[in-house]
Image 1 (cartoon, rainbow, N blue to C red):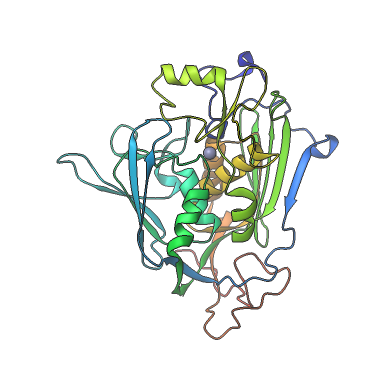
Image 2 (cartoon, helix red, strand yellow):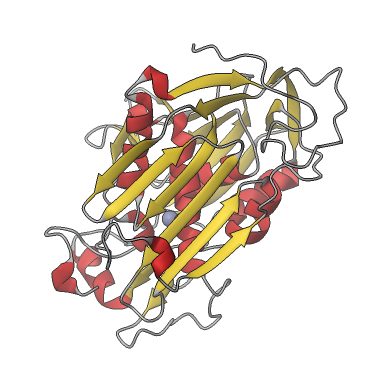
Length: 368
Ligand SMILES: [Zn+2]
């Protein structure tokens, strides 16, 4: 991919936050020699997870800077009641009124540089995806996120600091069963050369593929049955990335003001990774795209039972697939896990749907 190939008007830095031109269109993936990594093909294997909803044991304060604004930002994650989901409480400046913004695709205000919730002309919260990925990745259902700035702290460019902070305080199971969104019919989305499909699957499976002309990245694919263990070990540490030459463009536009080697993998004009510490995973780039997809699909409002496959995707494509899903009520249904109080909580049959552990078979399929 060269600069001239890109869509006009796009500023190609922070790949995780942008749709980008892909080298192939609709090709049969099996025809190519793609570097592919697969994790946890056996869903739901030996787990102590619960099918009840969870929240935090206590509040957690996290501070940093916004990667685009470069400004300080503080968030406080609060425990929240069952069924409330993930909601931002955007604190307003001065005499303006604070605003509650549920983390839902209906509230997406922009997807060009990152995922923005709220009205970009008024009160909003930007760069929500890495925090949402952490919450979704380790199965935290209900949280109120108080934030005093327009952008979630970028931390180290991954979800790891959020995961560590949550694990430090711990989570608790709530009385209500976890409510899933089950994909009933395949839906598709496309944007430029980016393609996505969301299809029925017993579990939560991600299959993400990218293709860059940059030799530092190339073509990578990562497939994972999402579990908290897989997320923490194989996905959460993957950082956002971008190209040095293109950083200047964004900075000239007043963006990427907070970007640095501390929160981004940077590739120079010679296709080399500039960060002294190198990569955290050999295929860190595609793993970060997967991380972004997990965060963006958390905007369904509930955990999804289905398989999401994306090729050359980004935030816009991720939002489009949820819009396609919700466009027809026949595409999906709510599905509550069975109450676990009278069920064995620490045995999981191999092959059980991820998150529907321990004999917790679906008992309800009612749409709210
Ligand atoms: Zn990202």
